[in-house]
Image 1: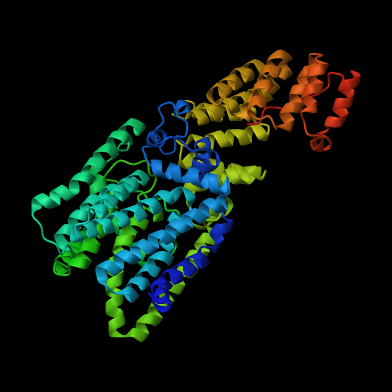
Image 2 (image 1 turned 180 degrees about the vertical axis):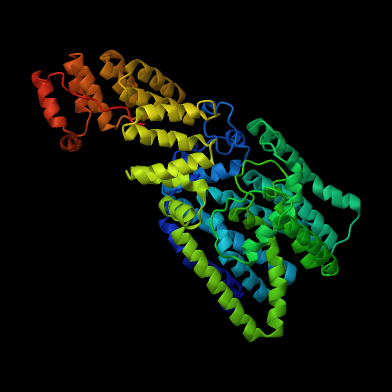
Length: 611
């Protein structure tokens, strides 16, 4: 192949890469936020490689089954966990590194989609334009820029790859392509459950696009390996998640069915009229007699008419039907724990198949008037690219911007608690309290808002109010981690009230629930020290030091307890373990000199427990 021919083959990939990087430049300075924190930043599981069996037994969102009680997320995505482990080995806990991996996966999805479009339409130029629409579309920014949404990128890449290999194996009879199709199908469903909808897409391909006609027996035989993989998946899922589907129950199946067309319309609006995009929290209307239900009925009739009109245009029909098939998992007909009926990230995979409609329309447009078509497409891509850049820099970049945008600009009260927590961390207590109250009134079953608000009450000297707040959520089901926080805040509140017996009782339970939490052990040590029980305080702090041997405050508090017990040699040993460069910062030098001379009096005051 000549150098010119190689360039002609590569230039579409180069264009896609350059434009995507320019649009997603803000992601390289982005932070961990929302689910990124428990799933990545505070998840010890991803910080080492594990056996395949361990990954296959891992429930998404439950990093430590021994501390999860009966809590289940209902999600089973082991390959996503493996990808996070790989990222940690490459980047460490560097958020821009994880985001870069997401961006690379997005590019891979664009490349494989470009290849699929070329195969189906046989028009490289139109396929490139359609791929660029997908690559730069603002509705895809959530899936790409939010690290925790990586499962949508993985399932899309492996599913499209599986379809390509399936087409090649069916049309060409290659056993190697068939094996590759089965393997990528397995990786798709291990990335996200939406990959299961690939089997109906295979069926649609056979009915509408296949050029090789074989008997039904051969077609069914081609599905058999995928069915075996799917059955194995459900067995592994049941073992990890305790159910074949999500453990959450549908509130009203009739309502879900009746409003499914309305949800489809919502998703189509996000694709064809992309403005005002953000993290949506959409619920069902309160009654059936409303415009949403009528709009759904109208769309049902429109969809039926469209399918009838496209019955001879098999490629367009394949695209439309595949898009709707892939929407099935997000129509709330199957139980999920999602808080919204609509989310931008869920559209990433279905939209890839809707792009087939785009490529047909673009090809016809280019044939009718190439000059006008190019101008219109360039303007469209400029809008998509500019809007995506704005979203990546102002919404999906960090929690501070995200919460302010969602609550203040979009009036999304679901994130009022997150905004309040962010303000609380900045010590803006009065404003934080306002949004905590909004969040608790709007979502009374979300214990996290109550836990954080109780911490604010303790911090502002209102421990009685904090105890009342904590009692409101005592009966709610919590993970061990959150239950540990509940016990810790109870202990901190009683400490403020100088009820040291109750304080130490609750702080002990916090340590039992979260034995690796240094803060809880430090608080328990402070409670024992204040009670004058220096032996127990020292024992607690010694165990804390085993977990965090580099903590200077722990060394200093332990030394103070040794001094109270007149164990000066132990105090000297502990203080000597503190690096000398930290001595001036933490006042160690003066303490060390007094210990050595035996002149220290019992006036050291350990820190109070912090909520």
